[in-house]
Amino acid sequence: MSTSSPDEAVTSPDEATTSPDEATMSDKEVTMSDTGKSGLISKVIGPKKRWRAYKERARRLPANHRTAVEAIERYLMHFVPTDGDSNQSMFEDLADLFEQAVADGTPIRGIVGEDPVEFADAFAQNYSEGGFVPARERERLTASIEDCTREENHEG
Image (tube, rainbow, N blue to C red):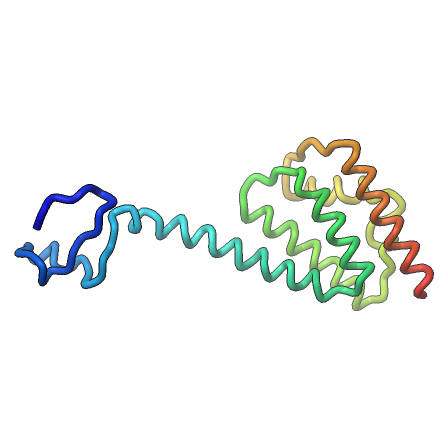
């Protein structure tokens, strides 16, 4: 067996004379960097699956509630949770809140109140030390909620 760099493939035991320990590595090609990535890959895929599940839940909400969740989500992206799990929990809890509101027939203003920025800031504080949110994002959130509630009032 020739010497190989850490990122080069380790060949199967049939190709060269190897010790029993080396032969148990695998019959498939494995790179040294792959073994270190397995923990990283599982960390990335887990949250990605949770994010996709959250996004699917948000997509199933009625249009006005979905628009409100998307506006709050965009605003919350400016906060920096302490870890990825807190970040996922925050968005899953947001989906829970809006799903329950839809089931109970609660209007959007019944969820966010008169000041959506205050609601989003208080909501985010449960998961993070906070972050800087530009004034334009505060205005954007307020305008999005105004649009949703205006449409909701016309539908009802």
